[in-house]
Amino acid sequence: MMRIGHGMDVHQLVEGRPLVLCGLTIPHEKGLLGHSDADVATHALMDALLGAAALGDIGKLFPDTDEEYRGARSLELLGRVMQQLDEAGYRPVNVDVTIVAQRPKLRPHIDEMRRMLAQAMGMLVTCVSVKATTTEHLGFEGAEKGISAQAVCLVESIQSK
Ligand code: MG
Image (tube, rainbow, N blue to C red; front, side):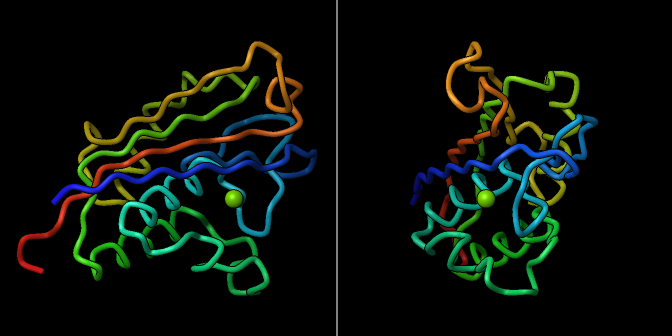
């Protein structure tokens, strides 16, 4: 059986924070604000995976009121989501993440972001897509007030479970 999942997330861009996307720290004068490392792309991906298995969302799994998750590395949380998915009897077939940011230019980092997600999920890099787009200066992403991300994934039942 195949199931589909969708996730989306937004974080505010502020000075004095590192910019972490798909586990990769990207040189930029601003970073994303949040309780964890605020990796907006990985958050959208985790919600897509949880959504596909109807396991809730990351707000339920890793509440931002919990001190355990202060400064948490989202890539490690992604590993925990994979574990939950496995326990529920699903594994991802492919994932596709879109990051919406006016700046910085993400194209030079795309392959490394794919590699980091694939490694964290134990998937082939050919099954992990990361894309980036601007909004032609429109909206909060275009004004560089924040970065948003969307993700979709397909998961399949693990035969033995
Ligand atoms: Mg988030």
